[in-house]
Amino acid sequence: MIFAAVITVLEVGALIVISLSGAPLLADAPLLLKVVTPPSDAVAWAAVFSASIIAFFAFIGFEDMVNMAEETVDPHKVMPKAIILTLLITVVLYALISTIAVALPNREALTSSSAPLAVLFEAVTGLSGKPIAMLASIAMVNGILIQIIMASRVTYGMAREGLIPSWFGKVGERHRTPGRAIVLVTLLIVVLALGLPLVHLAQATSIVILVVFTSVNLSLWIIGSRKESASVLKRWRYWGVVAALMSSGLLVAETWRMLT
Image (cartoon, rainbow, N blue to C red; front, top):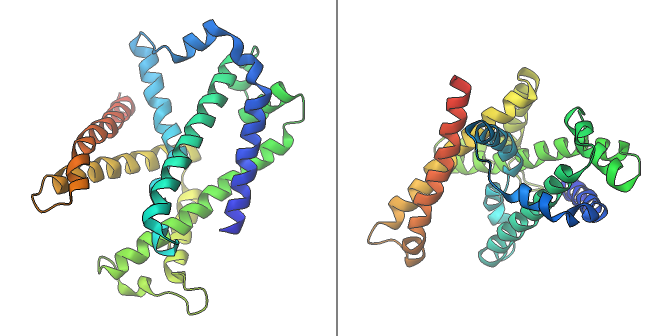
């Protein structure tokens, strides 16, 4: 967890440096208008939806934060704030980096590079992009570490609920962490990482997560519609329908693109 936190600080720091260094490029008002204007043809929309599936992979992890609630002090207050703040910070940084990338005069260098963020860093700061490329590689490892932490807690919870063998619900005496679940999740990630191409794995993971999101949001509607449900669930049940339609829309668009 400490290693993941340190890497996250370095990642965010690099993105902030790029955002500040590339801020002068954002002074082009016509370009900014073009960036926020939705495309007008079906081909462009198809490309947007296809890219969204891969980009969606980058947002995996926010929903996993709740799995650490038992290991958090005052989770009823801390967890909602943590989720909202991280989402807001991430969206702002992603929007800034994307807009700066579009505003870059030599965009061909980005599209033809296997390390576009490093190229963007070089272009806006004048410094070497090698540290950023190295940091990006470490960031991938960081993402895997976070998934091991979170998925192991899900596995532990399922074992405690009797959905999978209770053997995975044991915690270590010293650290009080689900060691058996951690080993299982780690082995599964290793097998998937070695057996599938990265892009295909990201697409498959995003599709699975979209299915989960759709199911969870529909569950919010179903549970919130019950008479005995808490008032907060009743108030938010309509958002469950909207969010389910959004998730399923992305899912259908990507499935159609893959089939055609």
